Length: 421
Image 1: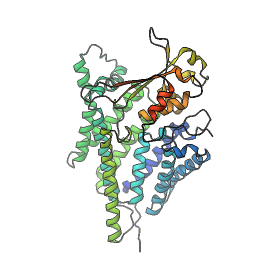
Image 2 (image 1 turned 90 degrees about the vertical axis):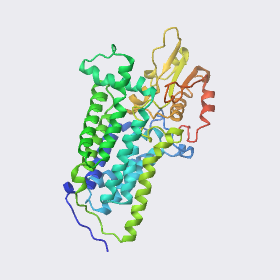
Image 3 (image 1 turned 30 degrees about the vertical axis):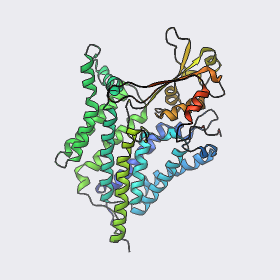
Image 4 (image 1 turned 180 degrees about the vertical axis):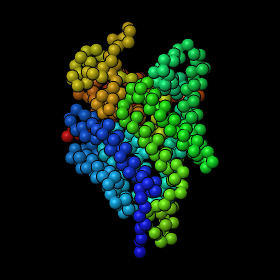
């Protein structure tokens, strides 16, 4: 027979973490609301599987209702093991379904919350906090690894550095290249240091303070320096709250409102929890050989993704519908082709960064431009994932839309657009 000991929210970090996750999910979904609700014929969605291209739009609305129902149960439910698992199960199934219908929805915070939801469906109590600490440490570790390359030091690292210093009036243009790159190296080194400090029992309080400072600096950099989207800022704020809950001193001495389990059932849960935890923590290593997408490998603010530059003939650019013209850029000197920005489409339409995978960017390009311009008017330049030591990128030019379609046939995951509702 199962018995449950009730414990107040303040003394139950597991319940506090679940409610924090539910609250921040609601905030993050609201910040990128069009990503979940937009269903106009002009909006482009790329499912993960080609068979899902024909799923009607009402399925999205049903799944979104399920996500909101799961969030409500986690926020306002009784807080016992049964209601928590039902809430997490509804949350994971519904959010996972929404992600399957559009690769763009697989934002880094979505990946993180889905992992936690799966773990919480398996077990609860102190073991869930132990597993979640492993996941958090793996996020910091793989995020740092993705930045330990020459391309980051020369590009994204310099962007982050200017985002910190320019609002303070510090000019870096007179610094030597070696100095600027050395300063950029502090970003991945800081992430690794925070992970190591959080791993140590004696130094954990310093890791907790360091992580808070690191995320506050990122909020300053991305919000005030680079004027990034609200979703990026909210996600960094969640890390501060999350780390206080799972790495704070109270998390190691708290009591839990958990059911008493038979020994056999307990060990089954433990084995499943351990297996899934280490699979989630080690899976990002496959990104190094191209078998894991960049965001699920926590390559955020990283230079690892391939770069895609799209340009159109001037006459074709003039023929674009009015809704696509805001994403046209200014041609380079002595160049009569007009650049077209996929990133601008994502920022303005979905309020979030575009999914960085080369597969998705090429699929999005086809979904946006097909039927609006002549296939021969499109040119695509691909700058592939850089060499980690030199920062050099192999380049490939696709001279028309037929070449883009042929190139997309090499990918495992779907690159076809979902049917318009």
